[in-house]
Length: 99
Image 1 (cartoon, rainbow, N blue to C red):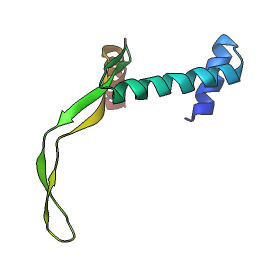
Image 2 (image 1 turned 90 degrees about the vertical axis):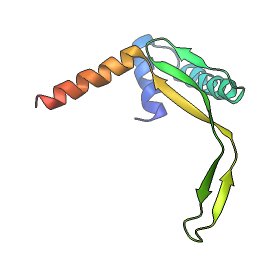
Image 3 (image 1 turned 30 degrees about the vertical axis):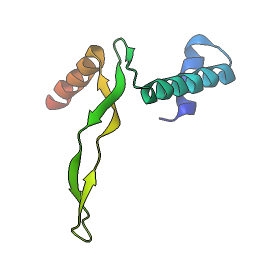
Image 4 (image 1 turned 60 degrees about the vertical axis):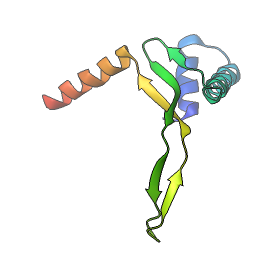
């Protein structure tokens, strides 16, 4: 599914101009990214949580040279599905198991 598909689906339901829907999606995406970069956590009830976690410093290895490298502590983005999204996933697993 593409961004255009999502815009079309929303347009079918609310009949707003597609350009306005696309603008809202662009702004939403931009704001989520900006706030994650700031270290904030974003909650979408029923959908999930976006945020950052800190990965501890570790020793890695260059696979070509076998040289050990120090990877410093750093932040990584994460997404944790919400309760309703987890339930949909669980229901689809159960349906597939019965086939």
